[in-house]
Length: 167
Image: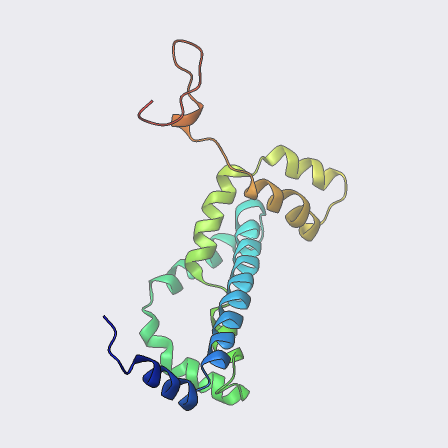
């Protein structure tokens, strides 16, 4: 149970630090960071999954190599770079370095390879759609669509669809 000085201590904390300013900064970093990661990772994953370009396999291999390097090895160079850009002490220093990551690109690429029908993408290319139009009007809506799992789409002997692995 909280002690009798809980409200006094909470008041002292709120007088000492800018709690609501810190909360606002946290929300900004979380929302903007998430939006950037989703955008850049899905864009790169779409390119790796559906397009052929020179050195594609080499670049994807380099992406996987960067995923295998421990993050602690890049702390000092990352700080030096942030300081040279003049971002030290700003929210940009928290948001921009994490705007894309190798794991997210790898994961989304695997999903895009198996879920995006090549026929729709080919039809869009024939219609003259470029990369960004295919990404925005074909890949994003299709990737948001839930795919039935093999367990939920099987039919039983009675002709009904099972609702899960224990049905």
